[in-house]
Image (cartoon, rainbow, N blue to C red; front, side, top):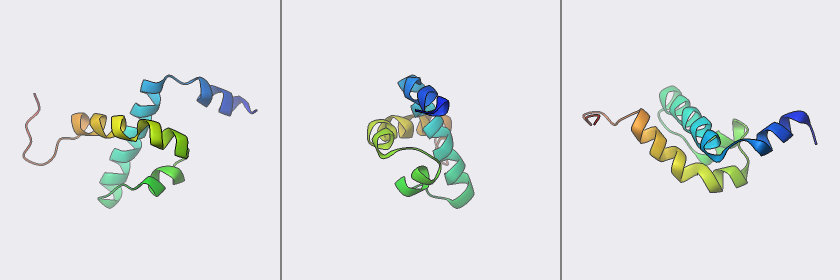
Length: 72
């Protein structure tokens, strides 16, 4: 097992979701959409996507409100 893989394995779940949310926002800003395959290309595993995709989108909605949506 590589050191990078070990660090990734030990990463806190919230950090994975936040990292994924940041990658989703980056994809949305660049292309206007974000798909699972876009996240796979950014290095997220299928297991991470299955586990953290919904939480990441909740974070995205908090960080990047839709046009016309007010922040609390």
